[in-house]
Image (cartoon, rainbow, N blue to C red; front, side):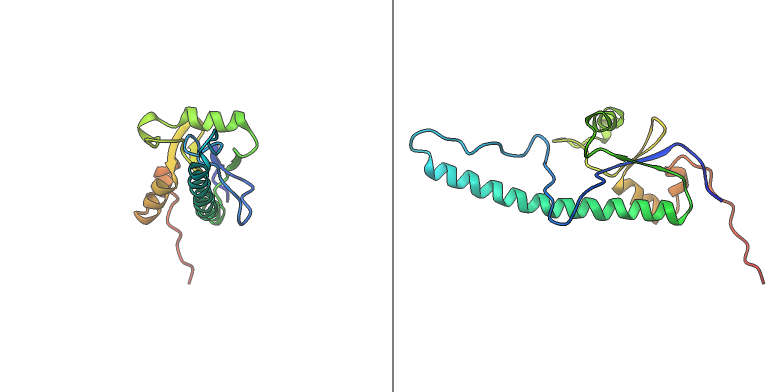
Length: 153
C-alpha cells in the first residue's frame, strides 16, 4: 500500500563521483590580475583548488544524504516526486523561495535535499534525520502515522 501525498524532495539528480558543486555566493571567480599580482594569483588559485576539493567532498555528502532520504521513502512505500534542481533554474528558485527565512543558512543558499509536502516546507536532511531518530518522521513529512502492523503467528 502506498501512502499518497504531494511530497517532493528537491535534490541534485546527477552528482557523479568527483563532481564539483558550486558553493553559491562563496565560490571565488577569476584570479585577480594586473601588474605585480603573480603571487596573489598563485594564492587565489591555491584557494580555488582547495575550494574545488571541498566542493567534491560536499557533493558526495549531498549525494549520500539524498540517497538516505530516497531509500527511506521507497522502503516505507511513501509516494514522492524527485525534483531535480540541477538543470532547472525555475525549480531551484521555487525551492529557495519556499524555504522559510529562519531555516535558510546565514550565507549562501540552502543545499539539497530539501523536503516539501505541497507548498509546506518539511525541512532539510538534518531535520529529516532527527525525525527518523525520534520516530516522528511521518509527522515531520506531514503524513498520518501508519497503524502498527500486527505479526501473524
